[in-house]
Image (cartoon, rainbow, N blue to C red; front, side, top):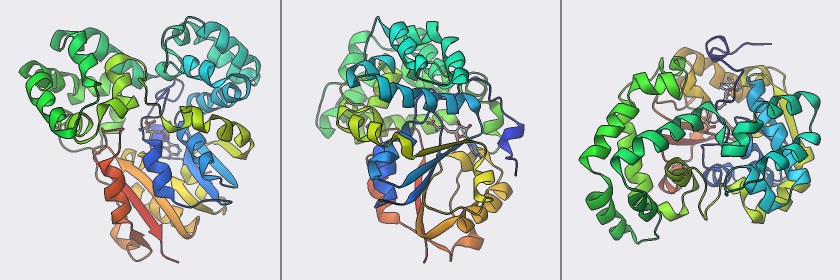
Amino acid sequence: MRSSEIEKKADFDHIRYAQLWEDADVLTSALGNCADQTLVSICSAGDNALAMLTLDPARVVVLDLSPAQIACLKLRIAAYKVLSHSEFIELTGSRPSNRRGALLARVTDATDTETQRFWQALSPDVEKYGIGGVGKFERYFRIFRTWLLPLVHSRQTIDEVFTPRAAEARQTFFDTRFNTVRWRLLLNIFFSRFVMGRMGRDSAFFDHVDGSPAQHVAQRIHHAGVSTDPSQNPYLHWILKGNHGEALPLAWRAEHFETIRSRLDRLDIRLGSLEAFVSTGEKARGFNLSDIFEYMSPETFNQVYGAILTAAEPDARLVYWNMMAPRRVPPEYRDNVKTLTEIETRQKACDMAFFYSDFIVEEVVS
Ligand SMILES: C[S@@+](CC[C@H](N)C(=O)[O-])C[C@H]1O[C@@H](n2cnc3c(N)ncnc32)[C@H](O)[C@@H]1O
């Protein structure tokens, strides 16, 4: 089995992402028509692999190096099976609840022993924050929201962010109420490379990133607050208020609950790297690659990209994000794929998971 560069550097015993911070609407639109095909997805917390079931694929191979991340998906599978939709979104943390302990116990009873043990240990935190709130990344946002945000904005200002408004009124609100000197100072401190590396992302993940995370975040906040409508943004709502508002991520919406539930047996979950999958000789028609390329050196990225092409069927799409480090088809493979610029532009404009700098859709030339 080929090992992955990041596997040697980061710690995979704990949940890093307890929910998906990549917009599944953007992902599923970019993958296009995948009915009856094999798809591949990086697991992370599992929500986007679940969202991909709405495309009616024959199967979704779900990969992750981290047993803790795979345990997130296994728990969700049991939750879809034993809970109603309203119970489900209480357990996730999307909605307030005082019975998450009991909901979790029902769900863990329907999982394997390992998953059960893993999640039982997290029960006190699940009661407080929901299963979508117990990762390192969400803890980072929680510290921001609990200790720092109140120094800058009142509760009323935060609530007013989510008042539906037309684009012009959003710009005025942003300029006059939100983007204050204190807010800008807070961004510069909280999103300094040092603090982010210590609290949110493993510092190894910054090895290949240029530029200041704070500058990048400031631009992206404008996208989330002005270019797109905050009242429709579940990710922004969670960051600023600790739960979801009216808008939910795709896989957690009522309208997809039964569809996903009825297709859970199409998930093929594998603990291991993408690099290991592409060396099995299996082929797929679409790849949700999250932002994993950013965690690789440019040389490793080139090698892995080439290996993915050998596992890609004609017309297969490679869909991925960049947060800060630029990654697109390496020059040596430019003749093998075409960039679907129109889809990229359209989807980037409505990407609610606003912190990424780029969204890439490449299609294998048949
Ligand atoms: C790349 S991270 C990004 C998370 C993401 N932005 C989110 O919102 O969830 C997603 C997952 O990729 C996994 N991962 C990173 N490199 C991988 C690789 N080469 N093969 C398989 N999984 C990988 C990590 O363990 C992590 O759970």
